[in-house]
Image 1 (cartoon, rainbow, N blue to C red):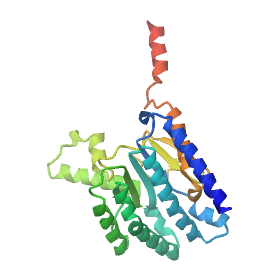
Image 2 (cartoon, helix red, strand yellow):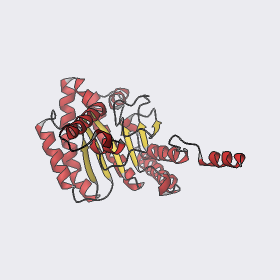
Image 3 (cartoon, helix red, strand yellow):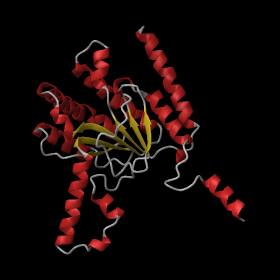
Length: 270
């Protein structure tokens, strides 16, 4: 049975590679952001403890990280732990922090080997000292890498990020470094923790929930949203390819008209 499952996975991955290969790089998303949801529900469906869902979820992170690298994606942002997640039971929080520590240590060598840059967004204060230490060591280990960027949102909340940005800009105005009339969208973007990264083109949410959950609210203003009922531990390369293929078929007008329709309208006026 295990051998059959392995062969089926290999076949599905080949089909995923083939489907994405047909899409020109310019029609693929440059930055994919993912709200990873459904670990606990997946575990319950399997008759397992919730924490087993988190363990399986980490394996999915590894698979999707590699898949994005294969597909030529420039940035992958993962919503790992929100500032609201502190409301969960203490034993689960302790396990999540321990799992995060093990991930940072265990994946560090692979991240460097695959030439992946690592970016961490979210407030470090409040995280256990060991987690903060491993975050810093992982960032330092990957600082010479120049491939795909893996952006991990840990203890992150977008509203708080925006408030911090506003306070930073207000302080610059207060000390006379900046005039209020100079503040624009670029000023705000450059004050966010994602400064220097392109905004997400595609936002994926697993588990079928139809909400943003305080994730990258400013940055996803024009992102295409793709929701799947698949729970995060069951999400795979084939599902990712499905999302990318769907993205490539969408007409991204950014508030304007479909270029083809605009041309027709112009012809009708002439």
